[in-house]
Length: 188
Image (cartoon, rainbow, N blue to C red; front, side, top):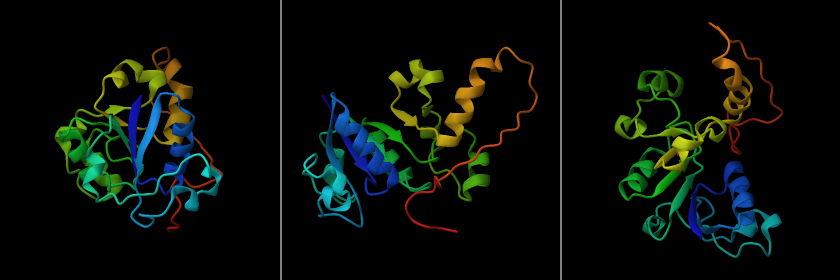
């Protein structure tokens, strides 16, 4: 049984992850964190989990999040995963980061897109891009998996099978979505 922690579990991504883990026969949710809802039952925020999970959200500042877990999922906004990744990484706990903080290998490109310097280039070098259809063998033993976003996944799954067969210089992708991938908090 894999004991999993979820940091940032009260957002849209955290909610979906709870759904997945509740159905996974080899995973147990050890804790779910939320700054805003610490101390409240998970089912009070997500009534669809009534009777399925009895736990309360705990604060991400609680030091116990580094104990008794095999794997941690970080469901945090971009640029907020850095310190958590560093601490879990140092403790040897496997990490799946659902933000963009460890997806882009080039720190200069990261700074252009996220308007901040990447804090941990040494850990970034170890991150594996989490697209199992393409990089399964690398993901299996990775300490840090940088989970790809939905648009990248939809694009890469379509083009990767033919990339080595075609002589392509440029690709133009036109993608649409019916819901923002920016999370539950409205922003400009």
